[in-house]
Image 1 (cartoon, rainbow, N blue to C red):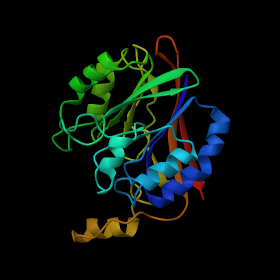
Image 2: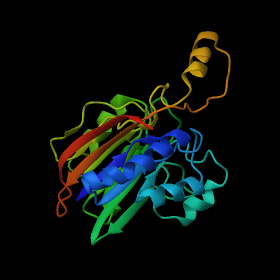
Image 3: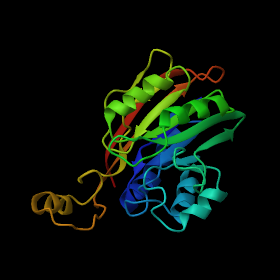
Image 4: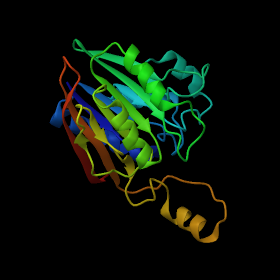
Amino acid sequence: MRILFLGDIVGKTGRQAVEATLPILIEQYNPDFVLANGENAAAGLGITPDIADRLFATGVDGITLGNHAFQKRDIPEYLNSNKNIIRPANFPPGTAGRGTMTLEKNGMKLSVANFCGRVFMAEYDDPFRGADKFISEAPAACKLIDFHCEATSEKMAFGYYVDGRVSAVIGTHTHVQTADERILGGGTAFITDVGMCGPQDSVIGMDREIILRRFTTLMPEKFEVAGGPSVISGVVVNVKDDTGAAESIERILLRDIK
């Protein structure tokens, strides 16, 4: 099984870059499943049903989210009704939507979970014990976790915690791609952060002049997604269908996408 995972899609700039590039990536890598983190797809904060539908129409099979999952008021009902988009599984019980999904295509199954970290973030339920539950209940041999987390140490610790029990742990949230992709000792593909799909001449996707003013004046100012050419960040993971063990992980980093 081959899985293509695209990093955090940021605003209209990132969406347009994905729409322009994903068909080419699909032709090049021929993935069995395409996943994307869409929690910043709507003006840099959250996602809307229309945007999610457009991503599905572009070729994305499953969408993961993160700490901004509920930024848009019309998303809870959509999360309840669409089984191919998930918010972090370690939100409290009773939260709209679901934290795991199992995608099926061409006779193959892929179980996916989404968790938020807790270091420098909100008081989410324990992602480590949440992962234990996902692993014990997921119906597919191939399992992937999107770990949406700020601290690299927490991401690395989480990767070692589930090593040998899931096919891949893909870090998201920081929008900066790390160069540490590897197969851990137990057979789990890992990368600390997959990066973003969004404006490259920016500060993690946001207009750099606004961010510079905030840093230099300490005055509040609304974030705005930057324009211009984009970067496309992702990974391709090859997994053994029968055991779920990862065979390889390859970083994708494309610049100047217009």
